[in-house]
Amino acid sequence: MKLQNEPLSQLAFKAIETSLSAANILDEAFSKFTSREMEITLLLQHRSAPAVLQGLPAKIKAVAMGNLPHAASAFTALYQQITQISGQD
View: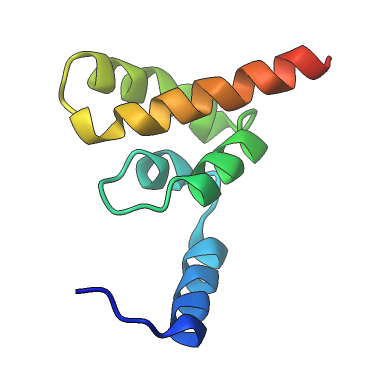
């Protein structure tokens, strides 16, 4: 059951957004409990951070091995966003 409380929803969204960082964005972006768009945007913003550069290969491998089947859509969205950025260069 989804509650229709927009102000509360916006507060929750903002709280999640402010808690995301380069250190935890990979886990959040590939989590079962994520809105995806916000996390993928932030993951792209932190794409050069050491934690992301070091951790992304393991996440990709986990998706490919079937250990994170729920994260396939996040990986697809990430790839699509990266190709858009590359096309702008």
